Image (cartoon, rainbow, N blue to C red; front, side, top):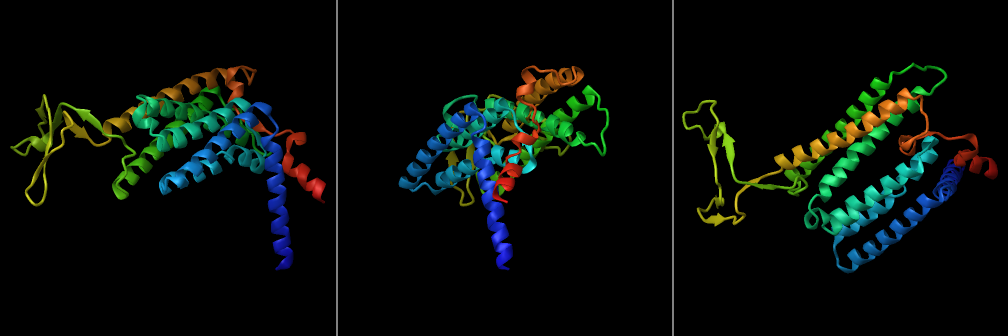
Length: 289
């Protein structure tokens, strides 16, 4: 039992040192990481003073997420390009600290749209890279067409986008959150309004307000200036901009694959297997032996 504990402690120490080396490998990404970590810590302390426990939890979660790129590189022995790593770090900070805690989703029109578009692009890059990395195996390697790689990248990104919308819907339904932001509309069309009980949609136009009748008979005007669409249009918009981001990367990835991986803009977003002299986990293990 003592030997197992000692081995476990040694493995954790090896991993910790390897992550520290990984973080400091690229100066630019390390500077971005350090700045964002400092800002998150400031936010964490502020949320604690304000007794905002949800914000405190999000700050701790963000702090952990900032380490994810380095953990992945050490554990899976892959090299995430500096451009992609910085983009992921900024995306995490923009989504959690700025978007959720500082309410940029509400204060800045289009903030959510920008992040969902970027998410579509980044997820397509990850899907594209997964195929390249998994196919780079001496035991089993196929000659993959550029179109196939682009298609997989696109499908992977859209799948992640759909799963995220499932998650948002579940949080709204079970925890009564509002992750699927509502939209004010002024016209509805539904077969539920067909008094004959048929399948003919009936439209209501020029909606100026909605009155809610509670179970006790009291009435409440929402005063929103229209009808409250509960998340459908926001979900469709999110998926559409995710689609745009995925298509952009898929097109770029197609030409990258057709050019046999020649250096270009996309090389900043395509992970690759680590070189032996950059495999910090193996290096640390050899040093501690």
